Image 1 (cartoon, helix red, strand yellow):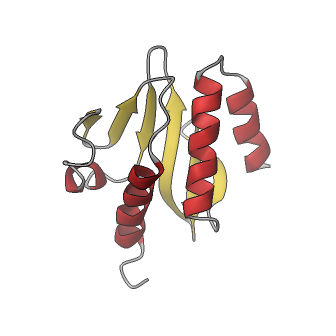
Image 2 (image 1 turned 90 degrees about the vertical axis):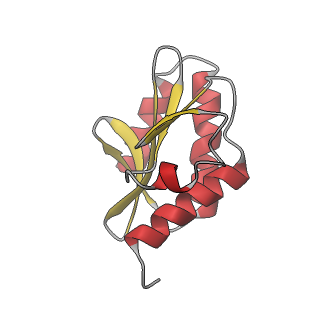
Length: 118
């Protein structure tokens, strides 16, 4: 059901937001294939062993990536320097896919936090 809910969320978006977030979704699932898709706080999210590890959302003038931890973005300060960020959000343009290498780092840091023993 959650995958269908994420499908519905994305289907409700206009282009290029839909394509950009669809690519982000594919990248997250490639990086962490065991992740379960869900809707959390009315936004698509990805859960591993019951813990939120990533999420995203579309807004009027930008897209956002949510690491579901306030310490991921600060830890990757140099990697996210070109983006507008807050403690728990990375904002990016509606027509610019986040680079796979950055998504890998964001997910790796969060997974390390959520599962420090592996």
